[in-house]
Image 1 (spheres, rainbow, N blue to C red):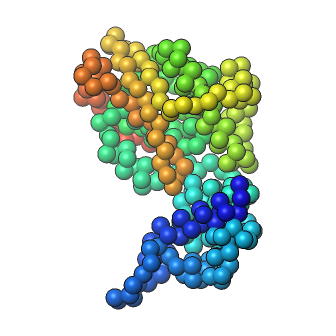
Image 2: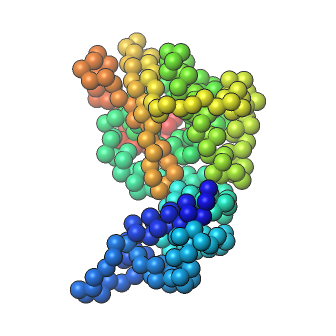
Image 3: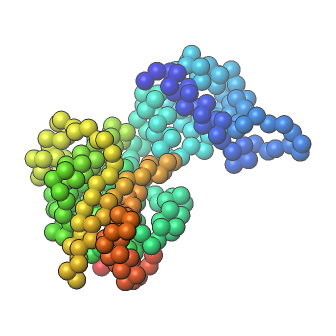
Length: 286
């Protein structure tokens, strides 16, 4: 990374910032540039406009305190804050994987409440799911500390009613290993993440091999067949989508248009009971 990379990131955030949300009043009839001016960002962050300019041009290297001040002034989300820290060569202040289900992720779940879907943090811990996801009836409980972690379940306690072809399993495994590897680079001091990775590596020779020699990830999707208790399987394709700002990801499961699986999925969704969105609280999930 170079100083120009950091400067470009600051400039993008500055130009995209909402002046009112940042605390800069708009005068009646005043003409504004897009986002915040350098002078305004400097005042909010406690530094001169010239220093902000030098940072954006890559002519000055920020201290960790300066990165924190800029992130606060820009109202940067967790993912943007982590990126600024990484570009400047620092770990985040607490270095912990954020696990807050923000308003954007909540709205996404609510708008797709008729679709099997979940939201997970950067360590692949489930944070919330839709009712139709639970209706697939494949996530049996193990009682283990990591039973709600997608990577741990794939490598250490596979679902009996979740089947994939060799090619799809290879893609799925590569995606999960790559995401955990990326998470450890961005959150190097998170003890829970380090413990999770160590646990999976000690239990799964496959994961340990992927950790040592990662496979390339071409596309963040794979297919799987869910064997439901009523005897009717349904094959769905999972697409992993990033949720910017909160460092979360959503997995959306869909069926091929016009297929028997699409009909079967509609039946599963129609029969789903309980709340449309469920946060990961073991008593709620029974």
